[in-house]
Amino acid sequence: MVGSPDPTTMHKAAAAVSRRAPVALARQATRYGGRMASLFAGDRRVMVERNLRRAKAANLTDEELNRSAGAMFESYARYYYDSFRLPSLSAEEIDEGFSYTGFEHIAQPVADGIGPLLILPHLGGWEWAAFWLTKVMNIGVTAIVEPLEPPDLFEWFQDFRESLGMSVVPVGKDAAPAILESVKRRDAVCMLSDRAVAGASAVPVEFFGERTMLPAGPATVALRTGAPLVPVAVYFRGEQHFADVRPAVPAIREGRFRDDVQRITQDLAVELERFIRAAPEQWHVFQPGWPSDFRALGRPLPDTYKGL
Image 1 (cartoon, one colour):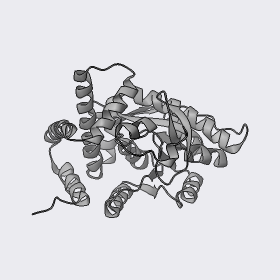
Image 2 (cartoon, helix red, strand yellow):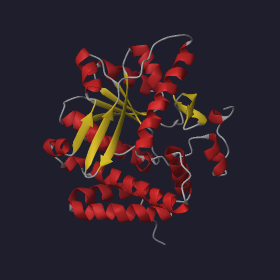
Image 3 (cartoon, rainbow, N blue to C red):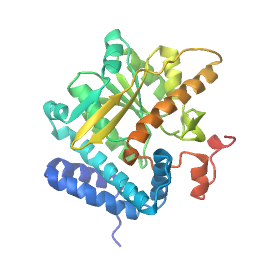
C-alpha cells in the first residue's frame, strides 16, 4: 500500500502551488477545499463548533452552525494560501493588500527605543501583517511560535517565516532570553496568546465566560522590561488584510508579581475576546482550550487545568 504524503511534503507542495496558481482559481480552491475539510474534520470540527458558540454568544441553529463552521475552515485554507504566496509578492503588492488602524501604538515604542509586545489571537492572517512590518515599514519582527510535530515540519515553517524577514523563536526554555533581546533591538514581538501552550507558564483567567488558562509570558515580559502590551488582530476583509491595533494594556506593579501577571493577563483576555467576537469565523483554534472541551472530547483533563 502506498502511504500518504508526510505533512512536510504536503506543505511544501501547497506552498509551491500557491505561488504559481492564478489568484481567482486559487480562491475557488480554498473555498471548496475548506468547505470539504469541514465535513471530515472529526474532533477539530467539534472544537470549531464549540468556539463558534462561545464567540457568537448566541443560540445558533444547526444550519447557522454548519454554515459558520464551513466559513471557518474556508478562512483557514485562505490563511495558508495567502501566507504561502507572500515570498512571491513585492513590497508594493503587500502594501496594496493591507490596511490598518492604530499603527501609532506600534510605531511610537519602536521610535522610543523599545520593542512592543504584539498580543494576537489565532485570527485571520497575521503573517501578512508581519511581512508588511518588515518589508514596508522596516521594523524587525520576532515571532514566538508553538513547536510543531513532526520536527521537520516545524523546521520548514521556521525557514519559511525567516525568509519573510522574521526571527522565529519556539516556545520553550530558550524563549525568554530571545524575547528580551528582541525587545532591546526594537523588534515587534508577535505573541499568539489566546490559548495555553504545553511547556509555557500560564495563569487562570475568565475567557468567554469560562475559567481557563492563558499564557503568562506576555505580562511577565512587560513587567520585567517595560515593553508595552499592544493588542492586535489581523482580519480578512474581502481581498485585503486589515489590522486593528489597540492602545497598550497597562502593565504596572500593584502587588505580588504573580498576582500582577494574572491581573494583566485577564485584561488581555478581554481584548482578545473583543477581537474574536468581531469575526468568529476567522478564529483558527482547533485544540481544546477549556476544561469543558476536554470533557466534551472524552479526553483526560491535563494537570494545568485541574482546580479551575
